[in-house]
Length: 461
Ligand code: GDP
Image (cartoon, rainbow, N blue to C red):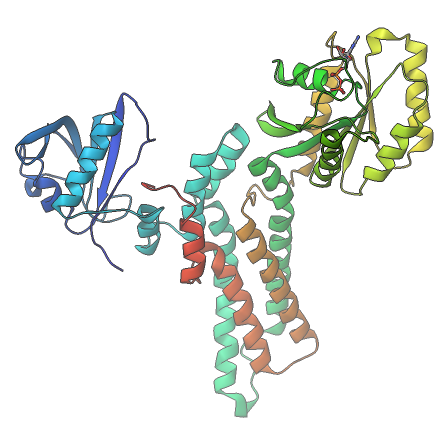
């Protein structure tokens, strides 16, 4: 590993009260010293802050505060310095240019965190958690990211992995004594451990559905014929005039996506063009999009005007959009315009026609009636995804895939035991399972995986 000295802006690129530049590597102190005559940096203790001017030769660039973190007690475990300057992007640029002139180089995306991982301060899932913490936009995503940063996933897995490793050693010992036909590894105990691992893997895999909802939000497609009240509902939900509302059929030509937060969870609301057969070119694109949006949605909120006489088109449309894993909520809209007898009848019509389970809510977006019921219904969808067993939630696609592969490998080992396959093959299958489990924490990894993960980080992280 190359420990050359890297530098980057750690704060957002824009004007702020302060900006912070981070510098890390073997030569950080002599490099920064060239621009900081106020103190002899080699003589300073770790975790101390120093006041002075940052100089480019004879010219003072800014009045700064400089923090020193000496190895190994720094984010990267290397000698590091943080420079807090007056938050002008121009000053930040001048400081970076000077540092590079002094012998540092610009850090690549995620390079500080990569160093923290390579130097063993954090494992791979924790490095990924750092990116998630930074990206968290609501309470739910912040909580799972912090839990993962604390080592949640790795703790769950490394215990099982250690037990499995013991068995691998025993099985490999058997291979050394192959001639003597001995069994050091108790097959019943091994099966017991595999059952335990299988259970844990299954519960982690199951948590991904909830994890995904936390990380990416739940996609809600709002569909209905033109004038059903989609934009008005969207506005009522978001309480702001975002979508254009009008009573000319087909004004919502394109799709609009807005994020609504309910009880700390994000819902991505997708308003769509009115669904109907149309010759209008632009609107036809909208209809096609609507169908595409439903394909990617978790929840379909289908709106129908309670005053309508015939619902056969709506029913046909719903049936053409339904999937088993799509939650359906049908809303009869504009109930302020019709009598209760009329809108009560609407529910019966849909109940008789649609066999799949659905929720039926009668709303008036204009008078804000039962909008909260709809919010509660959306919220309960996410609450139901929570698994009780595990408080560790998988939010990362890479972890999800590694867990699935581990589970497959565990199944192979179990089969190997059941069919009393040769010890060589059993050892091979066990190693395979260990390897997949190891990829989550990064105990087993390669440059391609690392490149993939860290290239998505921002520079300075
Ligand atoms: P979209 O085409 O489905 O997006 O429908 P809009 O939201 O544009 O609504 C069409 C018309 O119905 C507008 O004139 C709205 O003001 C009206 N509208 C929507 N929701 C309600 C409601 O709850 N009550 C009443 N009385 N009118 C509504």
